[in-house]
Length: 301
Image (cartoon, rainbow, N blue to C red; front, side):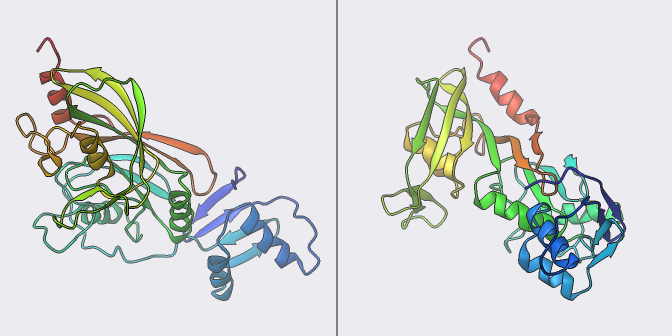
C-alpha cells in the first residue's frame, strides 16, 4: 500500500489524482471506493463514515477527501520548547527529554509531552488532536511519533501492531558485554511483588531484543538495542536478566554512581509514511548528558 501520485492539501481536504480507474461492475463511485481502499489504504470503516458525512467528493479526474477536519487538542497547551525531528501534514516526530512523561497519568507536577505538542500545534495554527503512536518511559529520552489526523493514526497504529515500526536505542550497561551481537528472548510479565516492576516470567508475554556491542568502557558497555516486541520496560528487564542492568536504573539493579536514571536513549525511529509508504528513518542525536556519561566512562578518562 502506497501512493506516490499528486496529493495536495487544500484546507480540510486532500486532493488526489488517481489516474484512469479500472471499470467497476457497480458504478464509477464504487471504483473510486475500491481505489481508496487498495491504493490509499483507507480503512473501510473510516471510508464508510466519510461517505456518510459527504467527506468524499469527485471533481473531474480528482478525488477530494476530508482528511483534515479541525479537532480539539485533547490537552491544555503548555509551551516549554520542543525539538521537532520530522513533521508534515500526517505525522510529527519530536524529541522527548528524560524526565518528561509522554502523557498525563494523574500524579505529574510538570507538563507532559502531550501538553507541549498541543502548544506546538496551537503555535502553527493547527487544530489537530494529540495522538501518540508509541510511548517511552518517563526517564528514557528519544523520538516519539504522533499522527496528525485520523487517517494517519489508523495507518500508523496498524503499522505498529504488525511490527512495521522499528525503534532503535542506545544504552550504557554495567559490566563488559562479551558477544558482539546477540538476541535476548525471554517472556516478560508483571512482578507480583513490586507494583512498578516487570520481570522475566514463564507466564509472561513473548519478548525479544537484539543487542549489538558498540564500545567497551570502564566496567561498562555501550550497546545498541532493537526491539522486536514492545513490552513494558523490555530493554531494562532483558538487560538486567542477562546480568547487565542499565547504569542508573536502580529499579532493575543498576548503579546510580554515574547516572541517577536509566542510561537509555532512543536513537532512531523507522516507519512507513502513512500516505506514501516511503520508509522514513528519523534520527535523534544523543542528549548532552548521555554524551557526557559515555565520555566519563571511556577507558582513558
